[in-house]
Image (tube, rainbow, N blue to C red; front, side, top):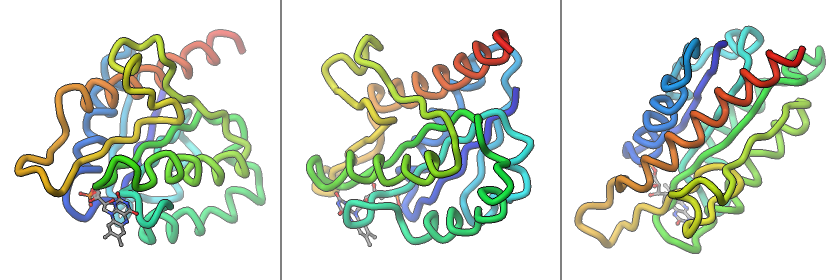
Length: 177
Ligand SMILES: Cc1cc2nc3c(=O)[nH]c(=O)nc-3n(C[C@H](O)[C@H](O)[C@H](O)COP(=O)(O)O)c2cc1C
């Protein structure tokens, strides 16, 4: 099973979340994970993947320009239905709690649905998510006014949980084909 993680990141927060998600993917037997900054991500690799996970910093409640520009190059894949039936999941980071985490994730999910992908979110029965409530993917706030505004252990656990869930979902689909 092959899983592609593509992220945009200016200051490393979203990259750290992508790495946590990648660890979660790798915890599942047989999972191969490819992690790329959007500037190095090759659209032609997507066709060969079982799942695609993309994420970015929230920019004014929506997808960062870097990632949106890349997603807008997926027209050929859309026209030929190349991503139909692939598993998809999303993630983002923002600087403020109410600064658009959920809006950004919903905006990230929309193009996946247009591509015919099957979206995997994060349920509330995952212990780290029970009180956190990140259901559309993993959305993390890294407050700029805190001296150490890096990802916490809980943030990383949420990332790992999403990666693991995506890989397990691919396995389940493959088993039922
Ligand atoms: C152009 C721009 C717009 C932003 N808009 C928001 C916003 O609407 N809400 C918010 O909380 N943070 C916003 N931020 C802050 C980033 O989302 C946040 O710092 C993020 O964690 C950065 O991720 P990175 O370290 O991976 O680049 C914005 C940053 C930039 C550069």
